[in-house]
Image (cartoon, rainbow, N blue to C red):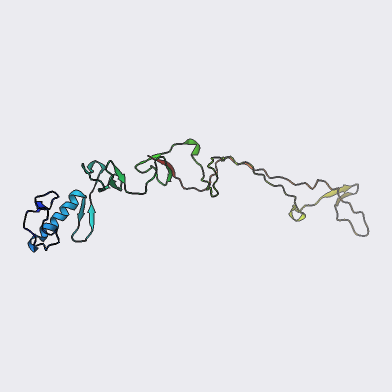
Length: 224
């Protein structure tokens, strides 16, 4: 049968090495509430975890970086509201409870400033650059320019259908005669001479350097 000693007997190293309920014996109804309260006290004091009797959930201690537990035990969990992450004490320091990211890792962020624990990368040579995806194991290499080069505007020979509609007029001593028109009764037909070399022509291409593709701005930041 469980004993009626004070709850301090439940503390490790206490005066009663086999307190009520810890040896599998029946805990008196009068002591149930005390044991529940003590269990909650131990969880909250040693693990910084509080059990909610109403919901059954466990609530971890939370607060700012400045309010972290002073003497944490290894494995203790703490929700840091300053950093917005959960942390675990590893015995020497508070570590973020997330996928480990190596220091100096560079990532892109869709935000004006990097998150806590990251430092923005400032490199004028990378400003206003597009991203090129490498899928075949190619080595990383920066390059390219916003100055458009290597482009040629192709020439084109106009067809008869593409030529502007026009006429040519030839003059003789008797007055103007429309070229190719002629007169009835076998009169003289006068044609103008052909000119031109049937060559292609080019179309000028110019850019003032202001064009940019539609884009989404991001910043680069390095893991501290």
